[in-house]
Length: 638
Image 1 (cartoon, rainbow, N blue to C red):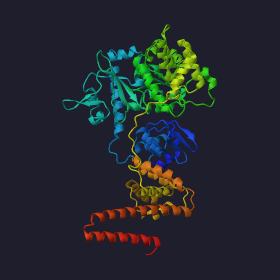
Image 2: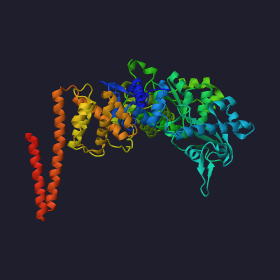
Image 3: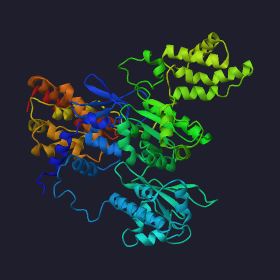
Image 4: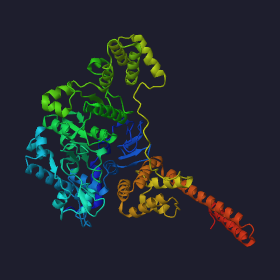
């Protein structure tokens, strides 16, 4: 059994995790100076304001104020508790946890119970499916060329046409509360008890990246059974906007091929993967989101993305929405690849695109599942190889509407529709080539086409992609009101604890500041915690780690600690004399502000009691005493 303490484990984990490596799995970073910058993953922004410091091993967003260390980042980005992050990273890094780590837990963590419950539920559904190979559900899957081996791999199943079959199976092992939290049962509307959520449906388990079953998609098998697909609700282990179906099975293939194919339906993904297109994934009954795009970036360094949605109108709309989300996610971090090998000479050898986005269009206009089953995986792989870049797909989709003999007005309408896509092309030579292609296809004057595009750009339209303004999320400020001059001085003093190689030890500084009157509630909490930690830390690194651990679940305080670390640079490399002067100046600022506040308060009271001679005299005496004490402090008299 490990003899390490909890803090020892935290320190070892942080020593072995590099924050730049960790953050870059979720955020596209570019090095500028000593830091790395990218768009903040915690709020919508176009211009990067999210900074990662390899020297300090912290991150800070100068847009929303979010900040912390590497463990704070993992907690926030994965929606995990500090306990969960430490446990997970310790297991990954092979660090033995102390025997006291899980003490005090009488029952399993709720999430662990839900994971276990979902696994047992999936097994129940799978056994039910395989028990009757003459059932409609089994025949339906067989008709899609899904074998028993595939059923085992994807844990496909069948939910019986019963209100309580699942509950009876899970009875005694999991409480109704856990089953409800897992989204497996629903409270009866007009009676006591619950009903099974999924009934008379083929069940498709949804795995998270770690292989836990977190939700189900369930397909109807009878005509008129609505909805066609019924999905699990969001739970504490499942958020459809943060999970891609099939990613658990596909992630190694995505890394190996450095590309990802995003499809629309569960069976599209299953059919693709079992037939060799192993880097296929799908959104879980929702449109592609910014979180999905960031997840994709972790597995494909080149961010080569193929959109392979259905070819019907809904699929076309999904392609457009998905493309917009992807472009917006990478806006400000580089260009989306806009020209192919035919324009290769125009591309710098060192140029790296933010993303390569292609659209898969099977020649027969069939859905991926149908095309693969009828033509084979090899034929689909050839379609992938020939998939056009997004800009080519968009332009070609519009040009297809052209018919010979169209009137000038009809041609003008097509040109107008093409303008936004041509304007997005930020290489003038490539844009000129596209103008030439369009003019030839539409049989119009190339010069006139150039003039129309010039007018379009001059009317205020950017020649690079500019996403629609995002609805601003409500962001919690670091401190709920602007800091006054005294509170700023208090932050300065606290930041001095975190100065590396300071001429003053942490213990010495604590003694000097013990009688300073801090007034900001949050800063008082930080100050008191530092005073408590002084006895068991030996240096700034240990103090910083201990502070982040103490406030692991308090994001507001962690943001302030991050601020203090950045602020500490202001007092770095000062001589002992200058450091002492800085301390005294900030203490004097705090005292002067307090004195001013007291005098203002007394004057206000004096005005209120002016009609009462006795009380007015008392206030005058208090003011005189205040001034007398102030003069004593200045002259050094006792």
